[in-house]
Length: 191
Figure: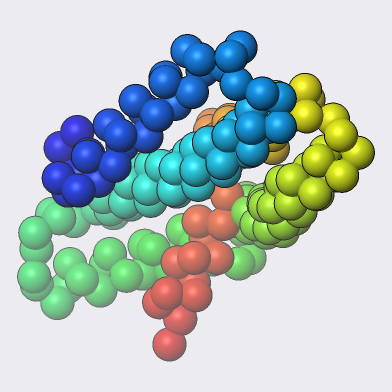
């Protein structure tokens, strides 16, 4: 657990012990308390999983950017540590040509990236709404034994995250670009 602060590790350990304790004594707990306990645990775990996947995504994006810089330097015929004006200009021209909006592959990958962004926002909103609606609907109607449904939204999110990962890898495989890669370059370096 390198990189995680001591307080974070302590909270993680206490949460894990509470989760184990709760489910060990699950059958002895009255159904109403089971529901609310499951609700609290599922919300805490949902937030933890969401943050964990967000941190993992940021880490992967950072590693991908470092690898991409090395690859594009090699393709442009420029040493990555070069400071000469000629190499910088050569590299810049190579990147402008590579990420030109005139290229079909860049347009397609930017479209895929935009679709992923829009669908991601909609899915995240839907997941939050479904957690809130389950939290309200189940107790009002007395469905305390259906507390396992509180785990469904985060399962949907994890499945959706895996689908996005596979889509990104397929996009890289077929078009040699990740979704939105050209748009991100043009937005970042457009003067």
